[in-house]
Image 1 (tube, rainbow, N blue to C red):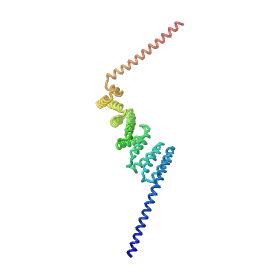
Image 2: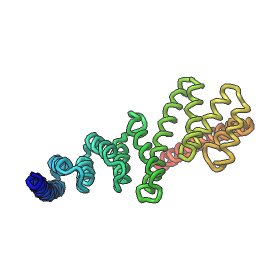
Image 3: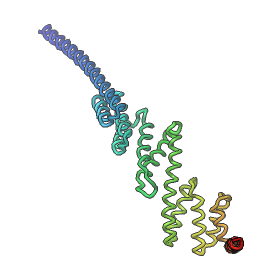
Image 4: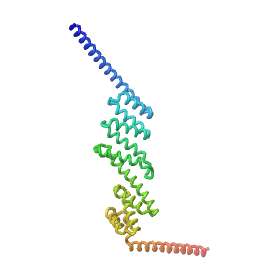
Amino acid sequence: MKIKNIFLILSFFCFFVSCSKKEIKENVILEKSLEMQVIEAYDEGMKALESNDVLFAAKKFNEAEILFPQSEWAPKSALMAAYSYYVQDYYGDTIAELNRFLKIYPSNKNIDYAFYLLAISYYEQIVDEKKDLESILNSKKYFEIIIKEFPNTDYALDAEFKINLINDILASKEMYVGRYYLEKKKWIPAINRFRTVIEEYETTIYTEEALYRLVEVYYMLGLKEESQKYAKLLGYNYQSSEWYKISYGIFNSNYKKNRRELLDKSKKNKKIISKLKSLLEWDEQERNTKKI
């Protein structure tokens, strides 16, 4: 009886080991087969991308990712799907693919490229400073992430350059709105806009004008000390600026008087020259008449 039991146990053990080996072998074969399918789908995607059939390319890259999500081809395929959409300016699809990539593959070695492509996708949708700010602000946010998280990359260098351009756009918008408020004599909103430029976008080309506008507004409000403060700041940083020269005239009454006198003198000179010219023309005509 005991011998029979031992035999049954050994038989069951041998059968189990045999089945396990068979299952492992089948899994290995299946895994290899899946990898081949992934590679084929990926290659089809690349060929379609080279032929500018970006929608089919994205479809094949997505297929490659879904077939074998645990393989090294999956994150590559996800990025290539995003790039396929980007090539033809399908920014909405590009952004959706990249956000999904960042969520599923947060530790992937190409994460810096994903952030850069996301930032560029927003950046290239910027129209001008008067339009919706969403694309401007989102591109700036992702470029700042690149500079902070991946400082020693080419992406970071380009991100710094792009942020400078974005800041110019944002400062331009503030100036546009500030000038509008100034024209409508809405002093406080105008001041807030101009101060935003010098506090948040001080490295842009609009800082000089923003300082001058503050000199101008405060002077019109009768707040001469505040006006002089910004005039000094303008002179200290931009002494050779045209805006500083204009602001100098606000406080210098002699300058205003002299400028007015010069303008009057210039007008007077023009009148004299014009009169002299007409006299000369009349004299020439008279001489010609006498000759006849």
